[in-house]
Each structure stands twice: as C-alpha cells, then as structure tokens.
Length: 282
Image 1 (tube, rainbow, N blue to C red):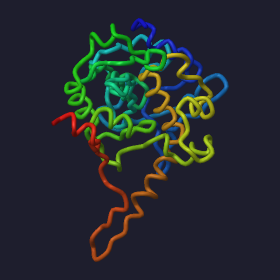
Image 2: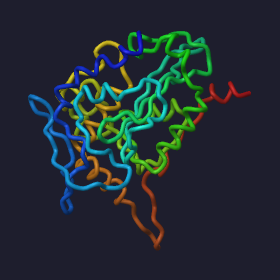
Image 3: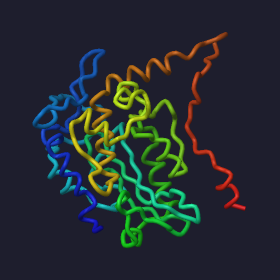
C-alpha cells in the first residue's frame, strides 16, 4: 500500500467532518457545550468565542480536504499543528517473533480538533513475521522509513506529558509504547458506560461506535491510525460532558480518613513487563 492510500478511508468521514468547526468551544458557567452532535448531512457546527490557552488550535476550516491537505504521513512531530490540552492516540501493529506477537509499527496522535500532531512508523525490535497489511496498512516499504522505538517513545512521552489522553482501549496503545500515563488524565472510549450499551455491556469495537454514534464508516479495508484517532476524538467530543461526569464520580469518591486521602484506583497506569519480555532482556 502506497503512503498516499493510507488515509483513503478518511473520505468516509467527510460528511461528519465538513461542518465541524475547529474553534475553541463556547463556555458557559458550570456547563460544557463543546461536544459534537451527529446530523444527517454532517456534524453540527459549534459556535465558540474564547481560547483556553496558548496551545489551542487556531481558527481554520475543518473540512475533510483540509485534513488531507495537512496530513503528512510519517512526519513525526507536526511543525504546524497546535497541541492543546486533549490528545487522541491510536497505534497499528505487526506480528513479530516465532509466536507472531503484536509489536508497534505505527503511532498517530491528533489534537482536540482532529489535526495531526504526530505520526510515525516504528521499527520493531524483532523481525517481522506478518505485516498484517490488510488490517494495519503496514508494508515493508513503509517500515524502511520507520523511526526506532526509542525515538518514538521519547517523542510521545514528551508530547503526552500533562495532557488529557483519549483512546479506545488506550492501555493497549500504552503497552505497545512501553509508556505510562496518570489514570486521572485518561479518557477511554471503550470503557465509557454510555458507549458500552452498544455492545450489550461489553467492550464495543471502535468501528461499531463510529457507525452507531457518529453515523460514519471507518476501517473499510486497511486501518489508518490517524483516521481511528480522529474517530476516537470525535466520540469523546460527542459525549464530553458525560465523560467528565463519570470522571468526577470516580475521582471525587476518594475518601479521607484522619485527613489522609485514600485513592480508590491506582493513580498511574504503567506498562508491566511480561515474563517473556523479561526473559528477552537476559
């Protein structure tokens, strides 16, 4: 698959992104109106008036053609997109080793407004046994231009520091990167109760949520991590107020005994090495 074809599925999102304004959300007291509502002919345009800080995306049209024109496959850290407070991440994997274990081959990050902030192919530590091109979109030619895992780790760790991280089953992405992130700063679309009802209470597939909640088709053919990260961010924006309500319920429920706060949940998600990973280091 050529690089120019990696985001071909993105055209499927055009109807839902053409009318989505990338301007900072209008704020009202004790109420957040920044979530996205799907409509028949696209996503409702939001009217916003104020910036939240120096890292908010500048006012620009957010049509599909705008994204495609700005996307630079394997660019690394974008030289033009502003980062902001919220970032969505997605990764693509290949199979390595004798047991065809999953290893990171591409990572993409987009900002709150869907603009590419980071994109890189990643060279696996072990020999690739299966490229899984039909799903991952990864080919030997693409990996010939890949960055090392260590370089990508450093880039992503620096990028995510102090940010709200949005992902779908995001622990899988963090595991692939061998990175951690404060749980308080994670919003996982696979765990949100309002989305789980689409899968009978179990973990819903991102493809299903995009279709049922946003009214769009993604992952038609080979996946694009940029496209999937954008869909994940749109899901978060669609239910942003609900996500924050769930977040407050979880973290504000911590009790204090004798003036000492007892944290109900582990405060920091970190990757734990498996026995196989530890044995490989010996």
